[in-house]
Each structure stands twice: as structure tokens, then as C-alpha cells.
Amino acid sequence: MPALVTLSGRLVRLEPLSHAAIDDLVAAASEDRSTYAFTRVPNGRDEMVSYVEAALAEQAEGRTLPFAIRWLATDRLVGATRLMHLEYWQGPLPWPPGSLGVVGEIPSVADIGYTWLGASAQGTGVNRESKYLLLSHAFDTWNVHRITLKADVRNVRSRAAIEALGAHFDGVRRAESRGADDTVRDTAFYSILHSEWPAVRERLLPRLAPLEAAVEAA
Image (cartoon, rainbow, N blue to C red; front, side):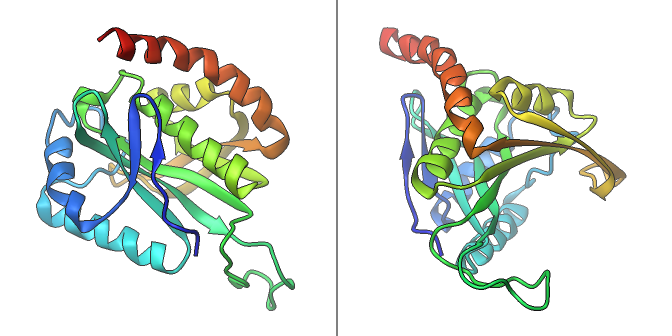
């Protein structure tokens, strides 16, 4: 199982998700929910408790590393995100094919997902720096081969944010899952390879600099 870690930037701190975060996350998710049409965000304390407990259960199995997002300018938890669908390619190939195989301490590939922010933190740079911190940890600490990001094909806002990172568009998987609006959704898949990370990082860093300058001026 990957070690728990806190990831700190200039705008945000990604803290290991815990039961202690539940009430603050309920408050964040209770702001204007109009942007959640294509994103499943817990609504109310009962759903948030279930959400956190499910994430921690997957974490205990070594399948995910979930975080609460703290916006440093306000010292509030404003959302959540995670490194998920962790796969471990070390050791002998599993048999039968498709079985889980070896679980180790260092994942070989991962997804970034289950990201949501309260309305007050959207459009502030919080999401951008959060993604940067996750990508840095995955590529520079874990040395993963690939990061996958995906979104409901109709979610123009999320897809634009992923594309702004410099992720490669891999295509659309039709009827990929059940959507947040209880329809059968098509999903747009994106990826960043280890060999592409230096260029993605160089593209992202100048876009983080104006956000850091704004924090210093505040």
C-alpha cells in the first residue's frame, strides 16, 4: 500500500482523507451545486460518510490514495481528489490474466479522479495546482508509467481543464459507465505518459506562477 502523504503547494495542501474531514467537506459540497450535473458529489452528511468510508476501504486495499483539498488562502477544506485505480506491475505476471496480482508500495500506473470542489473554490486555480501536485507525486516520486484522466463526454468544463494540463486525448469509450444523472454515459479518456511529463510540467509551471504571485500580493 502506498504511504500516506501530504502534498503542499502555494495555493493548496492535499491532506490524507479522514473521518475528521467529513463536516468540512459537507459544508463545501453544500454550496451552489449547479456545476455537479455530470459529477457525483456527496449531498448531505450521510452520503459524505459513505463516500469517505468507501474511499478509506479502497485505500486499505492499496487501490486508491484519497485527499481532502485545503485552500490555504481561506484555511478551509474545499473539496476532494484522489490517485486511484492503482495498478502494480512488479513481480511475476498474475495468473489467470486479469487477476489483481501483486500489490506493492509503488504503483506502476494510476488515474486521477473523483475530483470535486465547492463552488467558491472553482475557477480560482485550486484545481490546477491540485492536479500539478498529484502529477508531480505520481511521476517524480512513484515514477509511474502513465496517468489516466477521464470525464463524462458532455462535461465540457472538466474536459477543458484536463486538456489545459496538456493531457493526450485517447478517445471516447461509448456506454462506459452509469452517469451522475443516471444515464448511460460515454467517457472521454486522456493520458499523460512518463516520457511526456517533463513537457507537461514545463507547460504548467508558467500557469501556476501568476497564481502564486497573487497569493504573495494578498
